[in-house]
Length: 184
Ligand code: ZN
Image 1 (cartoon, rainbow, N blue to C red):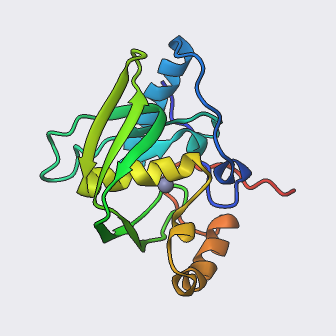
Image 2: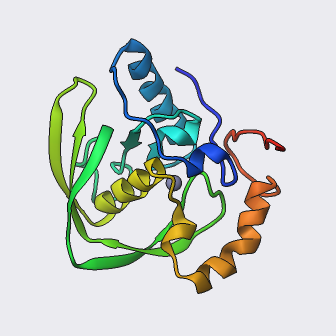
């Protein structure tokens, strides 16, 4: 296992739709373990594959560190599909390891159903609500190239602009490894 550098806003891979996972092999399982180590090291509760520069439809979630959610086991979701969302939505402040220092209120459905492959190649379908649902939707967004700034109003996005530029140019303080800026 190893700690992987995390991609940040401005890295192209975060804006692309990830490719489906075709084979769940030892290499993938090893990568998932490294992703968990990377996420925990960065005190995150969710991490998508493209956040560690891997073009695959896969993310991990571990909300068990949150008070009251200790019963929710860490989960790996491969080729996930959001199959149902509630009409009722909730607002809550979100952060993202690829947007260090940035926080913004994001509106999300309160309850969802998600279908995915687990590491044993079995299809699972689970219902999630509140913060667990939010993290799943946030990570799912990563797999379709979307991030927090795409989920806020234009007015709020404008307010975030300065911070986004600071993140892109790596002039923010980050206490976990991030990718180097590519000048293209
Ligand atoms: Zn994120």
